[in-house]
Length: 276
Image 1 (spheres, rainbow, N blue to C red):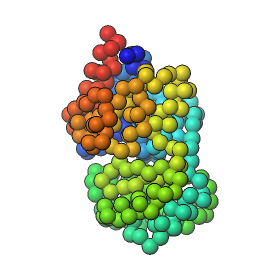
Image 2 (cartoon, one colour; image 1 turned 90 degrees about the horizontal axis):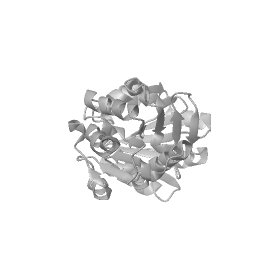
Image 3 (cartoon, rainbow, N blue to C red; image 1 turned 90 degrees about the vertical axis):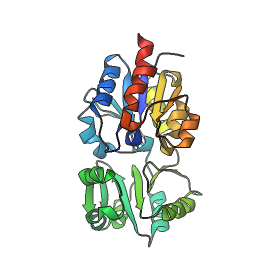
Image 4 (cartoon, one colour; image 1 turned 60 degrees about the horizontal axis):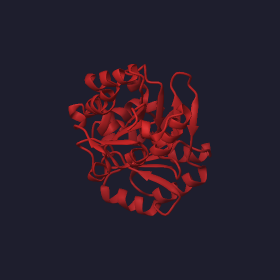
């Protein structure tokens, strides 16, 4: 196997612990990887507005694959290397499916994430865990997010929906599945909706092409269903011990849990150890 030259890390359930924090040990392993010449990048469903506080902890990270692969960014120059947005006509179809449903809809557009002010004021109805902190820190309230989507009438990075019940999420998922969309989930009760050709694997492929790296020189670490494509692309797929069974079954290696610094262990054992 070729030496690893790029490591792609999912965030929630992977690089971050259950409190949504980057532990000092994991941060140190990321720094060590970068210092050794490896490109270590976050490959996440989050978008840049959600990432800014976290990126301050890793100022030496040069690239970011975000929005489930809808954008690949050069953090040093500010350049957008690749983007794959959700068309406005598809947004309209999604709004039709969501009409009349008690959900929290988020509109990822440019540098902001818009959400109904009423939902943000009653966040505990829709967001059940420590992800509430991320939402409060990064969302822009608006009186009517659906009206805003129609007023913008433009491609978006993605739409994101929180549901009050898993049954309602499954109903909406089944209704959207026939449409040319990329559907994924990374939290207990969410649905992330991207362009049909936007996923983490494609974002990672675009970054590797930009850096003239092969898939065999890449390691991807993840835990949930939106990590499938990047793990399929990478030469070395590493699943967290806390990963869902489908991710564990497809992995080449299993590391420790996200609360036991599994990413640090993976970087040290599967990448840095090869470099002597």
